[in-house]
Image 1: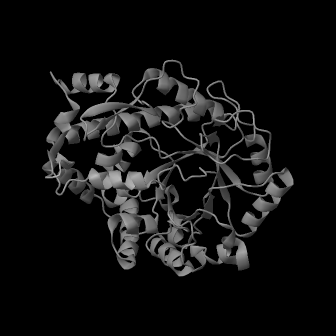
Image 2 (image 1 turned 120 degrees about the vertical axis):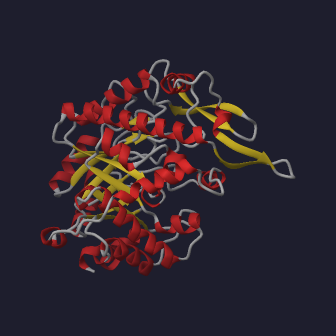
Image 3 (image 1 turned 90 degrees about the horizontal axis):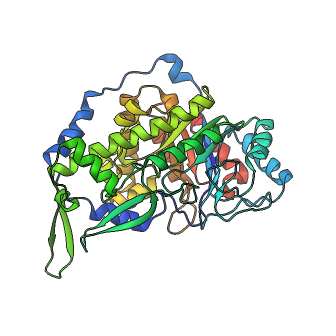
Length: 427
């Protein structure tokens, strides 16, 4: 299905950050609390339903995700899209935002260093590239999904926008970040308006960036903590109430675990974030009722739901209840998983199968799932062995006929028809 076009030149999204990987490890206590176990166990009520014959025989969609675009003319762009279509790609997810440090799309003159690639009253215009992209892509038979970020969109024209506060455990202090707070009514209004303007373009769908999350030590903005206190009927609330910390012999602060209140806090943030996503989705569908909405999902949401709740304040169940996107795009990056989980490749391949089983168990429609497979090392930027890519794709597709996506596209995938030959529907 999925060809996602555009990204940071420095891999500034969730697949990139070695620092984020370290944060994951630091924020993981040695054992689960009772509430964490209860959250995990709650998922066992789902059971995999056998696919019908028509579902088993249907052709799953297949795509690639592109992190750079160097084409400088419409003709070069057309030739590129034609090659993608020849290699069985049928859908483009095109980055329509520009953060500082992202690689620019050089096809049209640049009017701003940060902003978006479509006209809106809520953000600076980098260039009005989206109409050209839609025209060329549709002519080549490709669908266009506009890929837009949310809480990381610090370029928004949003007066007096409040930002996320992060707790630095080592120093026991709150830090003001550049990310927008989803609890601020003005931020919610601006993002809903931005996505509404985006829906006015001739796109086939929208992909919501994976930044609509709150990490385990976010958001302690007073507007958020005040709302939490009121809803939970707490007389007092301190961020330090959420964590079990101690100092090592060397004086280093170590996170030993989470308090019971932490899980109440994360579940509350999860519901509020999912409700905010639903607000954005409703604003989009009010403009275009038939538009398709997809959202990125971290692999932990399927493999370790209690960790996804702790680390990202996200769960599939809450998103389904309060927002219900048309498609979940799982960032099942096998090499990243291998590095983070410290498991050998055969175990990671088994994990991919378990993730697909859990996906179909919770939402049985395979058309609502896309699984992405990693093609280069995030650290080395070197291509991953083709057999390893093929094994990952095979593990996913042999479990259920979900959609698949290669991330990222690199030129070697077009050599000797590799991209078409990797299509898991042929293997």
